[in-house]
Structures are given as structure tokens and as C-alpha cells.
Length: 382
Image (cartoon, rainbow, N blue to C red; front, side, top):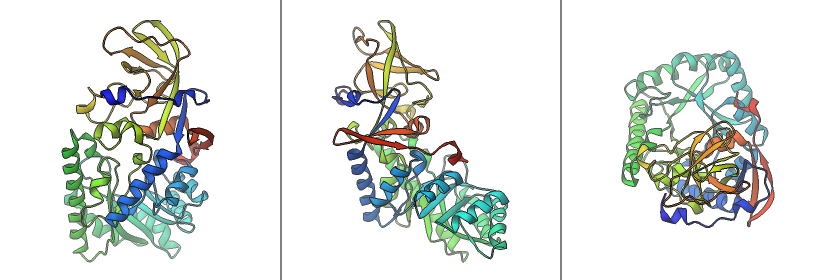
């Protein structure tokens, strides 16, 4: 951990929330939202923040109010919940399949401007058949594997698959998309920018090849907070879908995209055990913070453990049980005492997991607690 971060002052632990608890500073959030909206405007691209990061209606509405064009989500249930909350433009960026999901997609498309994802002809046809039977067309995006190796067709197959999908009854192929997650492995800022630009240029090249076959394909969409600032300015990219940027986390700090001052959230935990000078436990375990390390192995020496303890430098969350964070002293000299009852301010390594686990955020404005935001229930992930 850098000296600047380890020396940072903290008053988050004075906030009267039960632990483990998630606290969100609206002032920092708004600055982050405004920054990314300005980047999108300057680049002339649409901003569809990935709302699976928070799954909160209040957060989604705030993103739209501060310049986002729509929201990206992972599941149909999330899209339905955000539509219920008044969000009018949605991109469900996980492939869907089958008549049951087709019926839900059709119902959703009748109350929101919705885009749906696919990476196979069979899956697209299964959704298109439902729309065709209703005399309508589903607007679909083809997933491309840009190096992560998750979902998405390989670039070499993209043109042939796009042609087949665009010919399926009830389907209107309107774009291609990718999650350029391989950018998270960047070893430094220059490497990150190079990876981001390469992903953007790859997608633009694929789009040109598909358009050469007579498919209009107006949308070229990329989605990762790691790379959003760079890919937005790649000529031919039309949409970005970052999610973590709104709140930031240790992963974004390690990549150079954030500082402690631009992280809008903290998990507050309490020391519940301190049996030896060099070990302690807190009440925030894997069900609060997850066991994620920072994404790139190159950064794990500087940012060790499973979250950054801001107000107790030298202590590291070395291991997790479901309800225990195992703290070990890795600082210089004798361990700093952590009396039982001490409240600790923790920046999550992966903020999406903190939201998913805790599902409620205490809200600060001007340093004062003003209320809470609630996340969607388990059914919204279906």
C-alpha cells in the first residue's frame, strides 16, 4: 500500500451504522457520475452504466439524471426491476435463450427501449420466434470474445454468425458488444491504455466487416470500468458500459483509475476478536466483502489481501470465512493494537460484490447520514 493511502485520514467509522455495513457518499458518487458522463459526451458515445454493480433503483435513476443514456444489466430480472423503477432504456448484456425468456423479453420491450444479447444462432432464433409470432422484432446485440474467453463468438466467426442471426425470423441485429475484461490484467497505465485501444479497434474492425455484408449494425459497445476512458475515444465505438467507475474500489485504484478520494463507498466492520498481537478478526467476512483479490497479480504486492483497511495501515485482511475477516499484521515493527470494538473502514477490492452481499447502503450527503438505499431482492437476478 502506498504511503499516501496508508496515511489517509478517516471519519467514516463514526457513522452510526450496524456492522458489517455499506456506506455511500453521494458527493463522491456524483463527481464520479459527472466525470464519466463528460467523457462520453466529449467522445460522442452513449453511456450505459452497468447497473449490476449496485442493483439499486435510486442509484440507477441518479445515473440517468446525471447524463447516462440508459442502463446495462446482467439479467432479465434486473431489467424488469429497473423498468419498474422508471428506467426507459436497458441493455441486458447476458445471452438469453428459450421461449420463456422470449416471452419476458417481449413484455419488457413493450414498456422499455430494450436491447438483448446473444452469441449463437439457436439462442437468437429462440427469442426471435416469440417476437415473430407477435408480429414484432427483437433488437439483439451479438457478443464478441475480445480476449477474456467468457461468452462471445471469436472474431474469426463473427461475420458468419452475424449473417445467420440477422436472417432469423423476428430478429433485428443492431450491434456487437464485448466485455474487454482482459484489460484488468494490465501491469501499468500504458499497458492498460494499449489493451483498451486494441479492444476498441478490434470491435470497430469486426463491425466494419459485418456491415460489408449489408447489415446496418449501428452499435459498437464496449464495457469495462478499467478501459472506459480509453475505449470511448476509439473512432467507431458508439457505446460504453462501465459499472464500477461510479463507486470505485481497490481494483480501480491499483489500475490508476481512482484514488481513495474518488472511492464513494466503504464497508464498515468491527473488530470482534484480538487474541494475539499479530492477529484479529472482524465481523465482515466473505458474505460482506467476498474473497476477491485485486484483478492483476502485478498489483497484489502493493494492494494485498481482500480489501484495504484505511484506518489501520499495516493490518491486512489475509483470509475470509463467511462471517469473519481474518486480519494479520504485515506492517513494519510491532503490531498496532486493535481493541475489540474498534470500527474499521474498508475499501472493497471488488465493489460489485459488496453491493451484492450487503444489499443496503447508508447514504451520506455533506458528511451526514441522510437515509438508506435498498437493493433489489434475490428474484431480480433471475
